[in-house]
Length: 339
Ligand code: MN
Image (cartoon, rainbow, N blue to C red; front, side, top):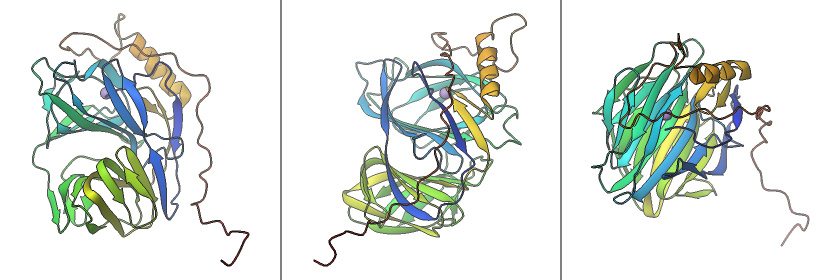
């Protein structure tokens, strides 16, 4: 997955403080990924940039791709982050500059740790299944590991959550006593959950984490007044030892995300995460000059099916600084009084 907007914004995020419990509704914005795939991008949002180290969330499909190219994201670079790929239906071929070739398929978690630098492509093959539906998330790497060697990890046997009213898989971290073996570098949780219609479920969580619930399909509430439907996210803040999920009348499929509020300020632009505008600008320069002699060791070549490569857009001159978070909304006392 990649940012393919012509003029991507530069986000300054992280360094967030615990807020306590709250419920804030975020609606994902629709973004074209190239000419072929429309995605709902819930993170980063102008109000909620990150949930723990989760800093990017794209949901695509379900889309009938039987007469369409499907996912067509040619070779592009990443730094300082992990990509977490999770398919609901269909398949996507991943190739990277480590030499990895992997089919991303439902139920198998693929985590690419970019670290110092990596190049990858994500393409539907001509013989793809008819439906494409999936998610890609990015995780910001903390400073002590963000320059580490790139790696690719794949998990085919994730632990199951099975409680009255809810079933699912823990992708990363621990939820309600169920722990995933997946690689992570900061306290983090991520789970794919299917809620029965009308079910009310409480799942044990770390009160030091902030949490959010993204709706893949159906409708959900989290015990308060806010209801979210497909491509909406309820940001829950910190301070919850249990997250409550209430399935709508048709049930729901949700991604529960959480993590320790990310203490470092990061700069996120295009497909790079760094710590300053200048550092990200240098990553962009190194990507531009990757083919020059002597080239850059940061971004080795990747052989893709069609060998197309994505060029970086121009960098903005004004970074999008975080605005101070407004306090949780409380009901405003009405002037009328009485009834
Ligand atoms: Mn990517």
